[in-house]
Length: 113
Image (cartoon, rainbow, N blue to C red; front, top):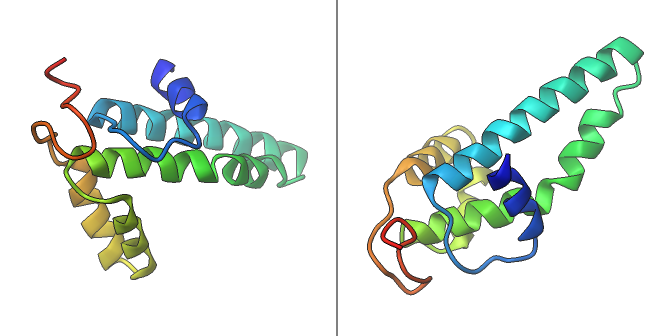
């Protein structure tokens, strides 16, 4: 949960690095909260909570993904590859699961600190 909250606190920080654990814990809690809100939406037949949640976390999701890409030595602009159907998603998953490289232009390797 701390990685999710940390990502929310750094919602406007597109610099630095995020480890695989930080990124994937954010994704895990995002999915859990989205499913809970979707269930509540379905029960109440409002279908309002989950879209508002997604919209509220749009910028934090982009920033944590940019920091994760920085950890692999790539620029955050690589997220634009999502615009290519299916292939973009596959390429991004490959990039996001890769291990951290040593120190790079985005900062020191967090795994070594």
